[in-house]
Length: 113
Length: 113
Image 1 (cartoon, each protein chain N blue to C red):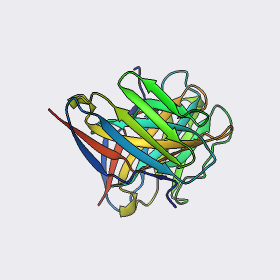
Image 2 (cartoon, helix red, strand yellow; image 1 turned 180 degrees about the horizontal axis):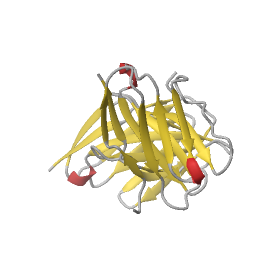
Image 3 (cartoon, chains in turn green, orange; image 1 turned 45 degrees about the horizontal axis):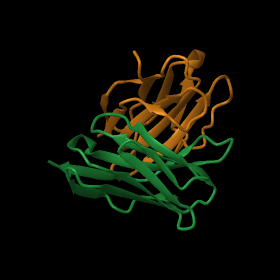
Image 4 (cartoon, chains in turn blue, red; image 1 turned 90 degrees about the vertical axis):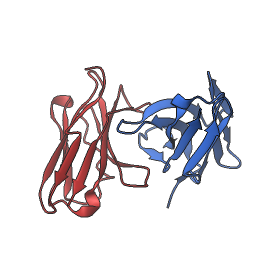
């Protein structure tokens, strides 16, 4: 049972345009959501997060939106840059006392110069 | 070093052999995690250590897998009698206390032939 789903394995975007990466989840007990970015041959690095009590969190070019009723979140990158080309993982964390992150399978973003 | 260090970066082994993977977490981080990423899959939780508490081994896929953390710092993940389905990238992460902002190492790519 996949609790976190990233249905698009890949996405190509022109440099300067907006990249939108989507993530759906089934576990309504998730209390916190995170996005990680991964370059080839490197470990994932934390990018941005959002608490389940919020619907938006912004950090520079990166914004995460959460729609709890739809159990859907999205990561917006604007403007997209070639250096943003990487695999993006969405993850959910259960509430207090939990520490396991449940990851999606990732979306490979390619930003074309 | 400043980050999480894993060794070896690559390991090729024959089916049936035992392997040991090593992780050096960030100094001062009390929480240590092992995840693995099989081809085309998301990151799968394996085991969690927090300080001197008993580890959470709930993610270990079989009793061929074990892990220890000596002195609250370095951790080794041991896979006995390796099977081809064990082939994956094994990622170690640490955090200052309990996630969710995990700092990942670059992983060990294990190939079982």
